Each structure stands twice: as C-alpha cells, then as structure tokens.
Picture: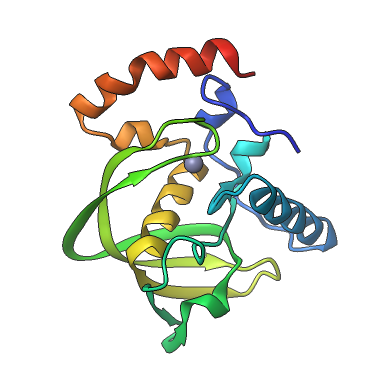
Length: 181
Ligand SMILES: [Zn+2]
C-alpha cells in the first residue's frame, strides 16, 4: 500500500458504505492495520491508501493510557479494543467539553498543529464481521475517531484548524503538494 498525500483528490472523496463483510474485506482491514503500524500511525483511513470506502483503523495505545470506554454498554479497558476497526461510523458528540491538542496525519508529513475537538463522543459503527457496536469514549481515542471519521467523509484536519494555525501551515501544504505524490 502507498500513502496518499495532501493534494491527492481521493482525500476529498466521501467513502462508500461497506455492505459486504466477506473475506476480501477482512483481508483488506488486516492490510490497512499492518500499514498503520508500519508507518507508525495511530490511525489510518481507507482514503489514505487510495480507496474511498468507510473503513478506518486506530490504535492509540502508544500515545495515551487514559481513555475511558463503554462498548455496547459495558466498561472495558480501552487497550482491549486496539487495534480498533471502525466501518461505516457515525459520531454523536457528548457534552460540550472541547480540548486542543497537536495532531498529525500520515497524509501531511511534518505537520503537527493544534486542533480543537470534542472530548467525549459516542460512535456507532460496524466491525469487520458486520457486527454493529456503540462505543462511548473520550480523550485521545475520541479525538482519533473524530479525525478518522472525518477522513471517511473527505474532511481533513487542516479544515479543523483555526485560521491563524492554518495560515502558518500553508507553506508546508504547498511543499507537500509539490514534493509528495
Ligand atoms: Zn489523518
């Protein structure tokens, strides 16, 4: 798999819904997960490897140990969910708390900038076997799910930056467009 960088129009495409949960899908999810680990990412969306489909994988255990998780109504340690596969996700925000943290993205080499996001969410999604789940979580896990779900809808973290931060990164964006294919 090759990573698609900023400037590649696939990153702006909304992903198709997944309707077939077969072996081909499971193989694809496995490859996507391997690619995320190989590139040292904490999340990877299908658009980033050239396919506009509603599939993303996540593993935040390297960057956070605090997320609280309620999966289908049951408390569990977030590490048991990693790597997390989210297919056809729909997010509902919980509460009004927002946090600002530096974010990066494998499609934007060298850019790490503050992005404001909701602290706690509930995401409804399907796993690679087609099972539906409701996951309530917070902290970096919630942030990462928001970042990846945005990708699946053609939205990028630069769209979430405030105006000043965005202005600062514009030269870097130009650089990526010119130098990464
Ligand atoms: Zn990203």
